[in-house]
Length: 387
Image (cartoon, rainbow, N blue to C red):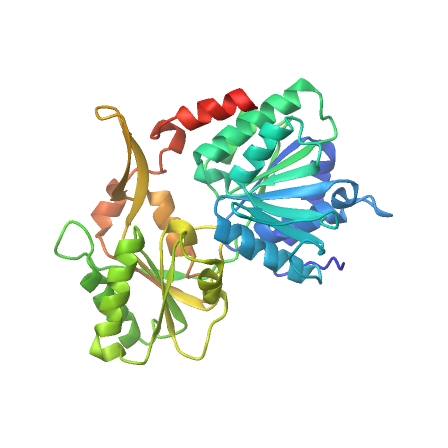
């Protein structure tokens, strides 16, 4: 195993301060913008703490959670590569997601989804397998993340795991709320880390209807392909779901101006691992990656210089009248729109085409409502009984 840190990553410039905070506190919140390197470098910082084999991973496995399976696998592969090994049971880094367990006793770091760690809490309420837990992308405030943070606060307050360290990462979205939840700055300090991003030009191109259509996406792709700046690199398109992705893919492939010129790749949760991994292996042709909000955070898709944002996403909503859970297409918050914009400013100057107008952006809520406020809680209540 090799521990090397890229000085170009902002989080590495704060490595000593982060390590000191982790050594002196049970909970640390690391807040950094897109491109700061917090997702890949934090487990390495934890591994490198101390001398003579006393790094945190060497004394107990480091659990590193991601909100989505594709992110867990891609982050695990990247961390394993940087540590000079391969992802898997015999490597330094393992990965555990629903229906797939590639972890073993040789692992010092294990990537997993939040749901997997919650299930382990039901089996072992003290999480004795782990010495350090990194909760990544906590600002997403999914039901699993909020429930997991509540369980961890209760575990730390019990005094049964005085050796356990919890590192929570967030984009620049209300990090103080996480600190306050764990007792304030004295108990859970916030470490701010700068981002590494380039200027992004925002262009508003609203369609004629209330919701962007597949042809609106085609027109935006055509607009970018004709623009000298937009022709640089690949294009990432945010769409609300699988149906819209398939409709947009068909429309792009039928468009005569793109015939044989572009490679169109979908990205959504139900794709097989092999199909999802294709986005990390760019070929010779320019690509258009059609993705749900799975690509908003954690994932770094290679060669993206332009983003097309439809401005909508599918969100879980509990309908109290019918007592049913529904997936509704809704406008995203300003925070989500800004996260999407940031995906094209990581490699060089980028262009973000928004298929809605500036007034629509300004009128949106600042943040997405936490899932716990808009979803059915029956499953969480049943899990609470288990843990």
